[in-house]
Length: 252
View 1 (spheres, one colour):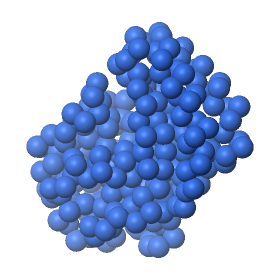
View 2 (tube, helix red, strand yellow; view 1 turned 180 degrees about the vertical axis):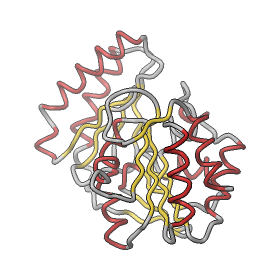
View 3 (cartoon, one colour; view 1 turned 45 degrees about the horizontal axis):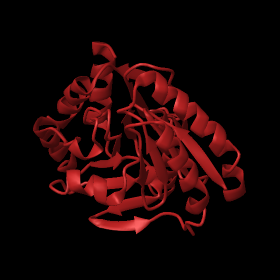
């Protein structure tokens, strides 16, 4: 993202009356860490977000794949709206609500497959969330982790259709969730409830691409990919430091 684009975003933000800011958490506001529970929001980033939250014309959401209790632990000092588990749960005005109905019977079919791959891939682990299952391989040897993740996806493809599930092939994580869940669907629900004349959407992972794709035809939306790789986002930032710099300019 060049200085001209930054200036345009700042000007559009200033002139808008009803703004929406959507921020992924891991890899966008905090660096990825070997242990997910150590990914604490840096103090300077926290201060910037608090300033944005305090702006009455700006509605800001953290939109993440993390579970409810997990993300609440990091953000309980900020009165912020949160979309968790890729849209399955939402926190508005301090109150959590489920966005989908799930009978959870599918987990019994998926967990043995995840255990099989975990046993074959040292340092990987399974995370069970309320509405989804995730297999993490960030701490695994790169070649082995990639190989095991491809094998896992191959095995899962033989199961998911019977249970109306989908696979998210994310950044060092393979996640299984219902077809009705996704960041794109979550954002669509927000727009069905209210119109916005400025949108800033920032994320780093494959799971954020549905969000970026939703905004492709929205003239007032600025979508930003953090890092490298193919993307539907219109713009790109190199690191969370650049994210902090952009958000700081908007919060001032």
